[in-house]
Amino acid sequence: MRFTVLITFFILLLNNLSAQSYNYYFGNLHSHTAFSDGNKDSVTSGVNNPAGSYTYAKLSQNFNFLGISEHNHYSSSKNPGFKIQNYQPGLAMANSANQDGTFLSLFGMEWGVSSSYNGHLIIYGFNDLIGWETSVPGVIGNNYNVFNAKTDYDGIFKKVKNNPNAFCYLAHPGFSDYTTDGTSATSLAYAPYNPAYDSAIVGTPLRSGLAFSTFTDYSDYPAGNYFSYYKKLLSVGYHLGIGYDHDNHYTTFGRSTAGRLVVLMPSLTRANLTAAMQQMHFYGSDDWNAKIDFNISGNTMGSILTGSSNPVINVIHNDIDGELADTIKIWKGISGSNNYPQVAYTSYNNNTATYNDVTPLLSGTQYYYFAEIIQSDGQWIVTSPIWYTYNDSSLGIKETNNEFEFNFFPNPAKNSLSVSLSNCDDYKISLIDITGRLVSENYFYDKYLTIDLKNLNQGVYRMEIRNKTSVKYKRIILE
Image (cartoon, rainbow, N blue to C red; front, side, top):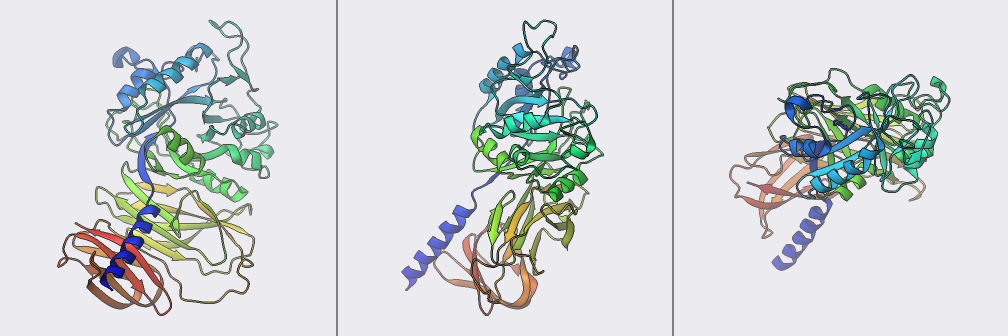
């Protein structure tokens, strides 16, 4: 009997481990060097190209990757000043500096112009420069490999869509940007949803800049944000995530601000980064080491799901510095409704939130959820969404049950453990050690419980929670 318990426990343990397949990596994909209009301090810094910029970035704190996205055109010297003969050397410098598993170095382009009804796109995954200039000082022939007119956003989105290794990310977007005919009516924010564009665009920033900051003490945060724009595009129907941009024009890579684009991937490789960006497994954070687990039934941010029951949304805020989440908000919207999402649930002074969306859902309608966290020091974090299409026909007539979800914090734990559940109900919560021995048991009626762990030994335990009809298991480590 004891052997059977051990085998069952290890099967559950392995299943739980396999679900925890993501690590957190912090960086920036929007920056410039002297190849275009960056490294403006090159005389004093001694850095004037991508190679030196990657070397500098590798020494920045809590910084795992840097993408250099030079402007794709010349216009005039240093404004932005990019020439086609620098594109291949930029790619080569990135390849030379890249160290999978240690630090990722990427090279791409910031495509487009920022005049009215246009807008910049951060693009990675192309081995050729995309542009439109036919006459540039110091360039023989065209200042591009692949032509795309500077106002043709339909063309550039489709080029990205048709390249499986590419993605584009909206840079400091405006509501009237990215038009097809030079009017606000055809901008991304106001035109009807376009599935081809949706396939190309992976995200937009929570914050961007400060572009011309010279700070290197991680303290120079941008005051503005693009949160409203993010919500607007989600309401139109676009499937995009939210990140964080630095837009460096001085030699400050990773150091002007502690804000970070945080990417969830199995390990630190270029291939994983591209896949994670395309799958929207990322979020934007003012905090440089906050790890956010946002999921529906173990499916992380960026997931597109279909189910026959109301979803349960889980959030865990884990800050290595021990900062507490002042609020965790879970937002909910209807994709394609053109109605902004609304806050569906708020958790106060807690590092976890569990929301069981028991509101009536329309069959065949796609809903989306994302989390917004404000830390006790005011720092701001917003996740990419999870999209959930409710389908009540897949299982015929639905039965009402007491199914629940739960999460807990912290893990690993030391003296105590905070548990939150999706429903208020009668529960029994048990801790079972690696031999199958019951070491702790609590009965309660609530959504929240704090468990005293002071008398337990260090090690791996199985946590089991039961109500009258369901049982759930998760692994916990005691330090």
